[in-house]
Amino acid sequence: MIDPDGYRPNVGIVLMHSDGRLFWARRVHRDGWQFPQGGMNTDETPLEAMYRELHEETGLLPQHVEVLGSTPGWLRYRLPRRAVRRNDRLVCIGQKQVWFLLRLTGEESDLRLDLTDKPEFDHWRWVDFWYPVEHVVMFKRGVYASALRHLAPFARQLAGPQAVPVPSPEARLREAQMGGCGHPPRARAFGGGNPARGSGSDSGG
Image (cartoon, rainbow, N blue to C red; front, top):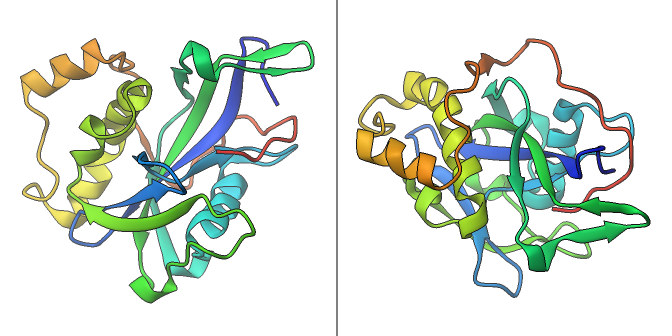
């Protein structure tokens, strides 16, 4: 499903170890690493889409995680020209995402990357909290910086300020230069209202 502005509704998942490190996964047959993410299906809430994508891409079930918080609305990024997709008469120019911060409450052995016929990832590791901002593909760096800045207070409450330090002014400047979303509304602790449901079928990453 593509909205009138050309963005596909999508959810992003930041899975955190109790020590503040984040789950970082390599896409199958590619050099690129990223967080789990995926499109929302018809009439699916962001929460429902998140749990579906979580299971499809990592093997985890709701009982293996605790939802710590989410972004308050859509964060957007545009695709590079070579990746712009056409769907009938609609053109997908990017993704609009709700991001969730999850704490792993299960065991690492619960993580499985091979539960589907077409796995998204073939390897994973734990990385420091801000590491993904400078190591994800360039066109996603701004939205990653914005999502992590939204979610950092929740992570900091659990893991402490040493594991999740406050970004320096220089890092904030880099975020702005990468196309970050400025100073959007405060992230919400999980349990509040939902952004819009999906209104089409599209479950890719």
